[in-house]
Image (cartoon, rainbow, N blue to C red; front, side, top):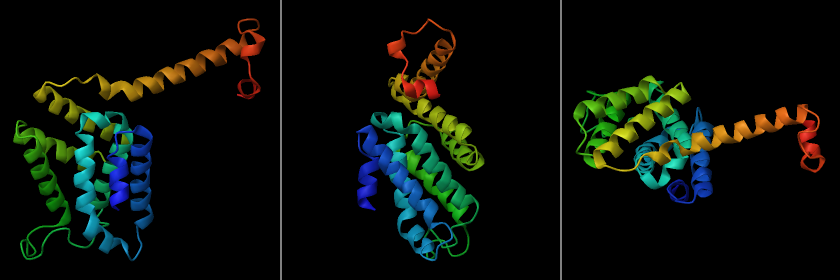
Length: 201
């Protein structure tokens, strides 16, 4: 597990993406397995804490899409009560709390300690959104991005890198659409620019 955490916390994008994909696949493959409950009890909160440390770190902004998929899946596991084992100490909370309430409280405390300049209401609304939006990847990612913007605004940091990945994807799609159009009009493209792969598209 330590090597997966090391990977998704890495500053090199391809290593971080591999780590995030691995942890998401691991969590998905554990769903419904006998060993899953002991895994959740041992590692769930640890993974959650590390994912939040990466999400709120400005050097890892390019992986926001994959980070949001992992967080959305983790919060859906809690909300859908797929984690039946207690994630909290039964001695400290003897029957007065469930995993949904505990993970909500745990996440709020985690974020308040990391970002004391944020108001309690900001943190509370953000955590409520993690439960409410975890079935809609796009909405969840935007909710996460909005929270990161609030953090950066409070810290006076630059926010341009938050939209870089989506901008790159839009430009790639625009370039592909332009090439496709140019291929339909005879004479626009030099015959040497048209590859067999492009012709098949």
